[in-house]
Structure formats: C-alpha cells, structure tokens
Image (cartoon, rainbow, N blue to C red; front, side):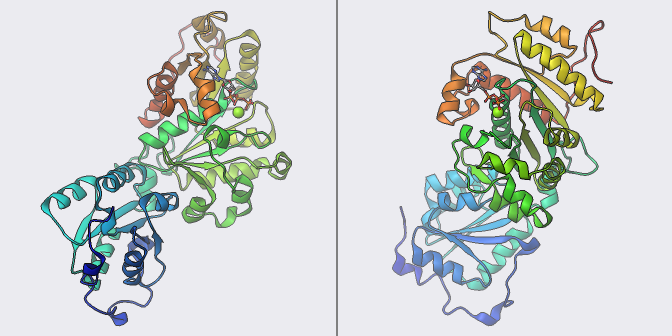
Length: 426
Ligand SMILES: Nc1ncnc2c1ncn2[C@@H]1O[C@H](COP(=O)(O)OP(=O)(O)OP(=O)(O)O)[C@@H](O)[C@H]1O
Ligand SMILES: [Mg+2]
C-alpha cells in the first residue's frame, strides 16, 4: 500500500497555507477541474487544502474514475498512488480519458519511480518538501497542456474522423433493423465498446429503444439517469452535465445514456427532442451510437435524419430479407443518401438459411460485416459482458472490430455494388 511514513508528510508543506499567495478563487487553465487522490484521508485533505475553490477528493483511482467524464481535469496523485498497479491505471487513463492529466506527489523520489511514473504518462512528479506555490504552479502548467473540448472532439491530429469535417462534430452512428430480435442491441453495444476502447475521443451510446431498451442490461449497468433526464435539461446540457447524466461502462470507458426506466415515459419524448439530444451529445462526444427499435416511428425518423451512418442489421431468413428490402426502400424515399447505409448480416453463417452473396445481390448492397452465429453471443448477453471483451478472439468479436474500423479510420466508403445489382439509393 503506502510506501511512506505519514510523520514525514508534515515535511511536505512549507508551513501554514498562505492564503494571500494566490487568487481567492483559484481556477485552472481552461476551467479544468481538480481532484486529489490518496489512500490516506488526512494526506488527501492536506493536499486538497493547498488549493482554493472546489477540489474533488477520492481514496483511490478506482473511486475517482466514475467521475472522470468529459470535462478537463488535473488529478494530483498522493504518495499512496506510486504503486505499480496505480501507475498501470494511470497509463490506462491516458487511453481512456484524454481529458485527464496527472501530477504525482511523492515522499521519496527515486530515479526508478520517476522513470516509471513518466512512462505511465504522469505529467510531473514532485517530491517532499512540497511548496504550495510550486504545486499550484505545476498543476496550472499541466492544466494548460490539456486538450480543449474542441480538440477532444476532433482527436489529437486535429482532423475529425467524422463525415462532417467542417463542423468538427462527433459522428452519429445509428443501428436499425426492420425486424425485432435481429441483433441491433448486440451490434450497437459491441460497436460502441470497440469505439470507446480504440478512440481517444469520448464515445456515448444512447438507447433510443425508448419502451424496451436493453443497452444498460447488455452492459450490466444499473443507471439512475436516462434520456428523460437528459432531454429535460437539454437547454443547459454541457460536457459536465453529460458526465453526470451518463453512466460509465468501466471496462471500456463508454458513456451510456439508457432508455427510460418505465416504458410509459417513452410517450413523453418526441422525435424532435430525441434528435436535439443526439445533436447536443455529438457536439460534446467524438462518436454517438444510437440503438433503435424495429419500427418507423417519429423518434426513429428524426434520429435517422441527423445520423451520419445507419447500420442496418438483418438476419438471414426470408421474412428478414423481405423487411430489409422494404426498410431500405423507405429510407430511400426519405432521401437518406445511399453512402450512409451499412448492412450487417447477422448470424451470417447459419447453414439452414440463405446464401450470403445471394442476399447481398437481392438487396443491392454489399454487407459491411458478416457476423457469425455463435453461442458466445447469448452467453455474453446473459453476463452483460460484450463479446468484444468476453470473447475477443471469436469470429463475432472480429466482425465487430472490423465494422468499427470503418468508422475509426475516417475513410468510410460503401463497397461498390456490382453492375446488375438493384440499387435502392441515389
Ligand atoms: N450472432 C449471433 N449469434 C447468436 N445469437 C445472437 C447473435 N446475435 C444476436 N443473438 C441473440 O439474439 C438475441 C436478440 O438480439 P438483440 O437483443 O441484439 O436484438 P434486437 O434487434 O436489439 O432486438 P429488439 O428488436 O428486441 O430490440 C440476443 O439475446 C442474442 O442472444
Ligand atoms: Mg434491441
């Protein structure tokens, strides 16, 4: 646990806190928030007391993590956080939380610890005795280096991987099908988890199946806030508020905005309100994945309209294919551009069903992914652990990884349809 003696900790400070040394309302660059973590409550409070204004405190990195959402934040790590486990967590935060930067405070600084901390991504290491002014100056400098909200959305390269390059808004990927139970939520959750793990940008999944949404169940989450809460605060919704409203899927960092807890609340949400919510969330996040029901209602039509990509999930049986054809024709009538459509053939290897290439030919669309039928899917659904995490080597997981690559690379091109195939778009 802790590798220091608290009695030495008195040496950390240079005496009483000098309230005149800095602004009464100490604010970090860009309005970044500040947090202090240490396993020892007294140490934690001592370090937090060196700053004025609001400082969040936590007894461990795990305790703080759910609060690390989208807003920029500097985290001061107390001496108890020098352990290999905590430094490994800090390293993982570098991938999961590009909005967070860390400063380590240690009682005894060895070259080895300095090396390990910097390799884990810690921005600066301070050792005893700690001067209050020095700590504040360090935290301020680190806050200045944090990416702005705009940079977080557009990615480290500054070139957004969205189809709306000029706006720099996050990419909205909607998952739809014309037949219930075809695998929309399995696809949406696995895709969103891969995006969250592989993207430096915040990824949010919104459950648009307002009556019977099961995104939260498939991710084994028990959220208290839902789309109803988000829509009721739409006018003032910002990164900090979205952070409070969403529930973090810890293994991936995915932010989850679930469907209403009671199906009756679904009636209170209109199509334009859902579309406005999606637009607001995309202005904060890098990717927004929306899971929809298999019905062309007002909410679905409004969400489809604001989507950059529509993943159409289809099973391989005749009723499914018939309904997909009708669905694609409907989207065509609604002027949804052809290049927005990505067909996912689910349970694509089932021997008793149809020939995949025949189906693609009938639909006039080449599938973006063929997801095999595999018992790992119902097992993962029942465990609430997406296949891409619980069975990463399975063919199902590989298909979802491949599907996600289309969106992560920024170069999404609809496979050319061979001549003679029926075209439903453009
Ligand atoms: N590739 C697959 N292999 C085996 N089982 C699958 C596969 N895909 C989906 N399933 C099973 O089908 C069930 C339905 O999947 P899912 O809930 O994702 O469908 P849905 O289209 O979201 O349904 P709804 O219309 O009710 O929202 C899941 O419980 C899952 O176990
Ligand atoms: Mg579903």
